[in-house]
Length: 438
Ligand code: HEC
Ligand code: HEC
Ligand code: HEC
Ligand code: HEC
Image 1 (tube, rainbow, N blue to C red):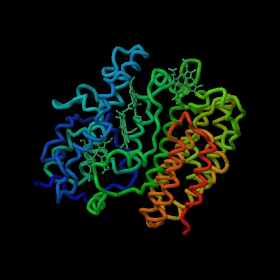
Image 2 (tube, protein in one colour):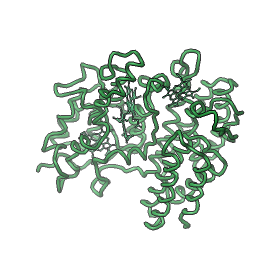
Image 3 (cartoon, rainbow, N blue to C red):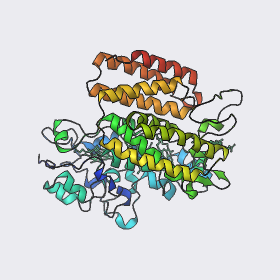
Image 4 (cartoon, helix red, strand yellow):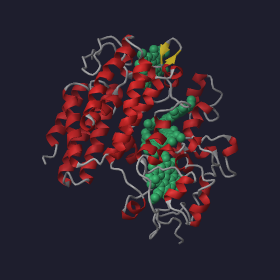
């Protein structure tokens, strides 16, 4: 078997590669999944021994990865119902669906073997192959060189966050609005490190990989993902076209359960970070809560500033005090700065322990009274605990104990509609008891 990749000489520094245009917005022809999935390339039936990469990536994607089914889902009755409710002829021909459920590049950028029905295929994440496929197959170029030819830097956490969030949160061209949700689209939920872990892995971070590429730790991936998500959300809030939907604000920015819960279950409680009175809809500040906690640890003045901004934003979004667009732009500037800061920071076990403790402390103060915050906190705990184990900051036994406690947080957030803050608070107490003592 011929080796098809050679050793990358110098990987780009984290964050530097992120300026590259998204695969869906680049200038290159997309050649189609079959041009990657040949049996001597990435279409082997089993991992190929002695190869730098698995070579069975195609099979993993096709059999286990939901991205391969993303188009097929549009043919199902639930998608047909969404389309019908929205007055669209079909889901599988509507740009409003295809932009996220396929690699929907313009017709002139589709090669002969390109098929929309492949869903989110290899080039939807790795970039159109027009310029990089040749040198890649010939095995003459480093990763850095291929990236200059349009290979997308998926290993870089900043670039990866931009890529995944473009569909999992939306961007200026694609967005799951409350109208889409009202028509039946599921609520979107995303955390970069968790979703990286649960996407069936078609690569192995072994010694050979580490020689070729820089590997970001899970906690760094989490941190960058949070700052990027806040930046993206603030950009949307500062954009009048996306912030409003008719006379009402776009409701996806708010906590779904502020409106969607039975009137018989009285659940309102004050929350320090919002400063809001009862009976108003709340902006969903889950990512901002995570970012504030990260900033307090690494850039305390930004942490303090974000706390103030958070309350001002809530006041503007829910009670009409002040200009939400202007506040969003200020928060975006802080978040953008923090992205770069987190991309440069080397997170050690001390940071990880402090972040776990901060999450528990926030919970004690009742900051996770709303589902969105509890959901993000749970994914954060799991991501940081795993990073702590990998960094040698917890023994296997300590990690297992911690993980069992975090599983209770997962259980408490498994169903958004059944979320009970008291149950979550008890689960967090369990995490506190399981915290490894250094
Ligand atoms: C901004 C990107 C975006 C747009 C636009 C979008 N979707 Fe989705 N859709 C997603 C993501 C991401 C998921 C997966 C959510 C998850 O599991 O976290 C999803 C999930 C779904 C699911 C559930 C799939 C499953 O496996 O359970 C259906 C059905 C669906 N979308 C249909 C549609 C239809 C129909 C349209 C067009 C009217 C549409 N989507 C537009 C991003 C989008
Ligand atoms: C949803 C996004 C996504 C899709 C779709 C996707 N990949 Fe990946 N791929 C990644 C990420 C993220 C990584 C890990 C980071 C990295 O090594 O760049 C990765 C890594 C890889 C690697 C490992 C490279 C190495 O240096 O060891 C190969 C090879 C690869 N992908 C091939 C494929 C092929 C072939 C397909 C289609 C069958 C595909 N990928 C589909 C996101 C994706
Ligand atoms: C072009 C849009 C697009 C991009 C880019 C994208 N995704 Fe997705 N992703 C989707 C859609 C659509 C679905 C839902 C597919 C379905 O359920 O049929 C999905 C589903 C998933 C799921 C399964 C979720 C579940 O509920 O089981 C994971 C995990 C995931 N994506 C991770 C990622 C990661 C990590 C990245 C970035 C490396 C990424 N995605 C990039 C569109 C995208
Ligand atoms: C400001 C209050 C408010 C917020 C916040 C809100 N919604 Fe709604 N939602 C509504 C209203 C009003 C309707 C229309 C109800 C009707 O037609 O009977 C609706 C309808 C829906 C429906 C359709 C229900 C049906 O009966 O078919 C879904 C699904 C939905 N919303 C999901 C969400 C999700 C997910 C979120 C959070 C991302 C959210 N909503 C946030 C007020 C809200």
